[in-house]
Image 1 (cartoon, helix red, strand yellow):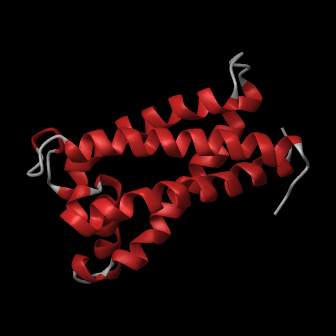
Image 2 (cartoon, one colour; image 1 turned 180 degrees about the horizontal axis):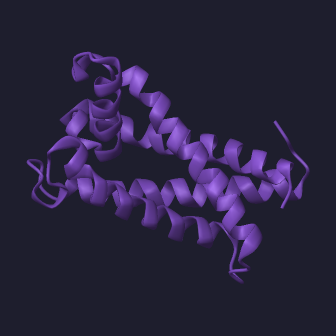
Length: 154
């Protein structure tokens, strides 16, 4: 493991977060902020720091969304460099995505006061979180592999 590999993890994390975010926009537009669990969490966190109305903080809250995605990319790079999973980065990343979705479910209620398994919108936000985080993880694995194996540093 070297600095370039960690940097590639950060970049792959940002790219994967962007891909996931694009897929979350239709849900947000149709059902609002609470339909996208991690956006809702980041919005509440941002409102506590900035001391502003959460409804006005969608764009500033994306700082935390991308920060989490980038840090997840670094953590993934560290993990795959230490542990040889004997599977592709794509599969390892997808598993990581599911684990991140579990973390979102665990921390959601303490942050937002909304119980994800008793969500006003039903099961949709929970299912979408798992699907979107699996996409994040797959994209993370794909981009980390390609950035690292072809000596591409953006």
